[in-house]
Image (cartoon, rainbow, N blue to C red; front, side, top):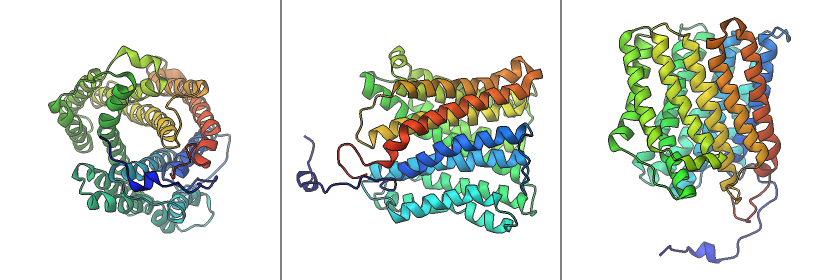
Length: 397
């Protein structure tokens, strides 16, 4: 029998209508959605030479940094600040402290465009977000003694290190940006592997009354194979050994994903978008294996992980989490289903088009970018009121 707390029996105070800083997912998901549109629009203009803008960092590295630490970093911050409060039952930052975290993230996006700004100040501000979020989630996790969730502060620490490695090159201290980017991408993939293994099959089973197949060995091997691939990619980026380990990782993740499969989820967009997003992780490892054998360009694997897995999973998770944590039914609007289709097309074009028609690479980037922009523009238009306004059931959060 479920226990009912005294607080639930008492009348709840009315919640303020403006609730953007009530819980972590609200500002960071909205910021991520808006930034996803602006970032790719600006990148396309820079790539095509339509916008004469000079930054103190290379354009390609700025694009990679903002995709990883800007866009995806916001989604990670919003998700963890929300999930940890749900897991532990203890408060994570809200109100003014949450606003400070959000504007810290926003400052990191804007500072590169400030003329004459000391690059060291930019590095200090940009690298501060993940440690701040790490402290915010580590406290309730440790107090609740949830050791199974202790990996998330550790992964945030590794993301901080990876960001510092990128900035170290921009500051002229070392040739470390590539290592930083690779470490960050694989840390985010690891987060998706760990969290995806928890929520994707459970969301599916809860909605469809199915029973996903899970094998203990596969659940342990999935994150282990991810880390093993990272280690070999960093040490021997072109090697048969690296190709073998990446291929093994692809097989393990494919088996895991197959265990969750049911034909029923194709009728539920909030589910199939998550399964497809995890499928891009499998594709990323397949392309990593082929790339280390120099059969395809290594950038295809990176974009399978970023434009594919990160783009699709973040959009799907933001859509679902925002509905659930604002007291709404877990049913996506038809226009959001269109956004899911657009982000899937954007990833497929970015990864597959250059293989089929390598002579039209620039066109692939343009078309993929436009589909990406449309997908996240739809998300912002639909979810901005949801994220800004209070819960429909009157509860806090």
